Image (cartoon, rainbow, N blue to C red):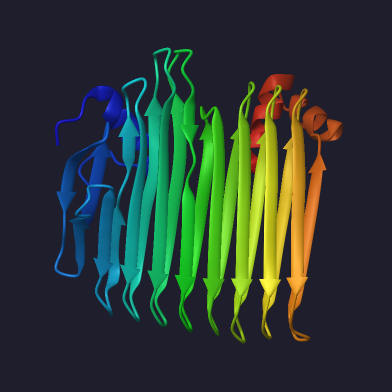
Length: 307
């Protein structure tokens, strides 16, 4: 792979990659393929129309991983990529995605990734998606990811959705449909600052008996930034669902939490929670007595909250 220093740093931020990853990978840089590797159990092929890739994971595949990061380092690039994942029955894999944008120019740079997951019976998947932005240009760093998940009976998916720094505008849309006995766990970590805007939209349909969903967001809004968390769980069977927003608001930021529940079955057990508040003064004072400045104390609290 021919990647420069900036692109390599972006890969470290979004995928913890310091070298070429083991196993299957597809690395996209500035709208072009930078590197690809497949394995005996995991195949990656380009879509015929060039709009993205298909990832096929054979049934029974265990303890393997797929890395599909995207980096943009040219100002003014705008792209939409469609990636489809076909996860075979009884497999157990980790998929690491994410996008990093370095923009030092005056034009906006934007990556919109549409990921569709088809999770087979009794398969297990951990999906990690990290977004990161940097650069001192006036052009914006924009990310609008769409994730669509279809889960068959007995399958399980854990999603780690992270955006901590540098993204000016994002609308994160996630839709999931669960069959009987399927389980979905979502953990979102988000921080905005400056005049950044971030919207997180989750729609979860529990369609089979024993289906379970737990969607939790932890966020921090600083300066004049704005956040919206919109999570809807619909119970169409004897199922359990929980959604929660826990947010810290600072400075002149604004946060809107919209948790929603819809029960269409007498045995659907659904819960929602939302809490928004500032950092407690006693927490800061306690850390300052240990030798930290007020700013250091705030940073310590925020970092611990977002872990």
